[in-house]
Amino acid sequence: MAMGEIFSYSLVSGLLLLVMYPVYKWLLAGERQHGFNRAVLWLIYVSALLLPALVPSLRGLVSALSPSPHAAGIAEAGMPVVEMVETGRKVMPVVFLGIYLAGVAVALALSVVTGLRLARVIGSGERYDRGDYTLILLPAGAGIAPFSWLRYVVMGRDDHEASAEAIIIHEKRHLALLHWVDMAFAQAVAIFLWYDPAAWLMREELKAVHEYQADEAVMTSGADIRQYQILLVKKAVGARFPSLANSLNHSKLKKRITMMYKSRSSVSRRLCALALVPAAAVALGVTAVPAVASLLAEASAATVLPATEGKVSEISIVGQTSVSDAGGAEASTTITINGEKHEYKKSPVYYVDGVRQDDGFDLSSISPSDIKAMTIRKDTPETALYIELNNGDSGDKTVTLPQFPGGERGMMEWIATHVVYPKDAQKAKKEGRVVVRFVVGADGYVKQPEVIRSVSPSLDAEALRVIGSMPRWEPGVNNGKPVDCQYTIPVSFKLQ
Image (cartoon, rainbow, N blue to C red):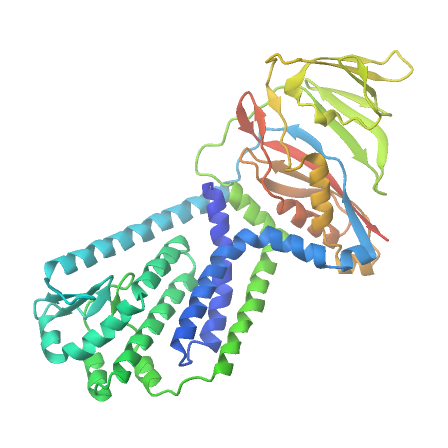
């Protein structure tokens, strides 16, 4: 996966976290149902990381299940016009990609430093094997609050002498529930989404749940709760490791003490988690807004490396079939051979190696690299185009045009099944052909979509949205190098 794709992916993931975190904080964070809340936090994480990959499929499913587009109107894609072009990279996506990668590097470096410091502290203490865990005792007055990590329980000798039982019960609960796994995962997400405040707040919520679970273990052990609370107050100061370990003095004491006296939440309160579903739907809906989809497409195409050189001085063949506003083919064809355009009022008759082809012959079905020579005859009653193939020779393989998965037919079917006829356009009886120009980048992703022939704001926006959400193409190739190719596609909207 290219850096630009990772950046775009992170933007959608970050948006999902940003929308779902407030729902959790508002409806669930204050409930005494710690195991359930931990599971919900994991669900939010997993949803934020998996749903971006499913966005195209989800949009296709919505389009397929929605009856409104086909009940009132249809949308059809015409044949594309394509040309290879030299395109410059937009500056801002590259700048933002650079900032993102720099932020990831800084966050990763800080996490590594914290991990090294943590390992150094563990390595500096005296070890005592206790079977299911290893006790690490630090010198008295070390100034580090008790904490646990992996299978280690770490505390100062003064803490061990004063309150060893309660501390060990607390920290062993962290180890038994594998809270360190949560911390490692949450920190990885925070590095990936360093710019998103929700990523850091989610990590703190996860830590708070851990402390609630460990506090509850002390409460049910029969320990003196008041003495334990005094211990927490005493340990409110002291160094802790915010990114990796569970420290005894983590989280606000007032909240932890309040939670100890709170009654367990009823099972019905768990239904509040269902509010996360519409929240996620809203976030995904935002990514479908044409302006946002276009920005995500540009972010996907961004790269910090120099752009591939792709200037093309001549093109072997470019075929064009125009499409009328009514959705039918117009009787005209333009063929470009080595930079020279040949326009016909009627489609020419094609001969391949001397064999006349059927009327439905598609010139784009032959790769330019497979053509040895072409001759156009205009002195006959019907314009004829004679094509001589290489017949297995290597030939001059200079140009290969981009290919949509499934070819041109697959592209037209994909657009037709993913377009949703806007309701306001249906109501206003708007129809017509929106012509969209875009670039299939050297990396195969669609970028820079723009409307060059408008019909109405809503129809234009829908055409842009669909084009901008296209799956990855096989990029065009010139002299063995991937190049940018500019496409123009008419999308016809017609009311039934």
